Length: 114
Length: 112
Image (cartoon, rainbow over all chains, first blue to last red):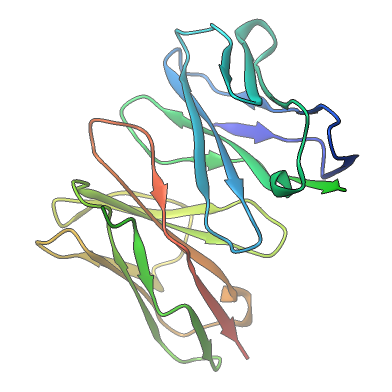
């Protein structure tokens, strides 16, 4: 069975601080996909990134970066120089190869204050 | 390019009633999945439709049923509503060949 754990329930930072959101996953599959989604107060889940299990290269997109480590089954998300607009709930998710259905973690609420 | 749309936005029902939620997928997508998100939790997978057939189902009772139409739009039906069915219901669309799912704004269902 698949499982995604986001141990941090809520994180509060001040604007311009860097923040890392942790994600640990469990799966028996050798091929799988990992995702991060952002859910602002409006409720709509916004896709941020997809990573497949064969690609451990770290990725950077603007102020966002992702660190995928198979050895520790982790897929962590870092926001550099956080902004108030980054305040949202962030979800890490996992899907098996051949199926696009997602198993989500419980989410981490990020509060960025000015 | 229209994204995923859902209707209605909000809905209030009484225990025992039935409800139908609707979803139109993003242009070019042929697969629709439904998720239930209780307050403070991550979304839970209900089922997925492809080519008008239920392709996968999560751990939800038969009171939850769905349908996909030839234009790929989808409905989620819930019968005999319980208080515990109160949640945000999210629809996501994708192409079967790709794994990114794009979500709609959700329908907030309140059962009283």
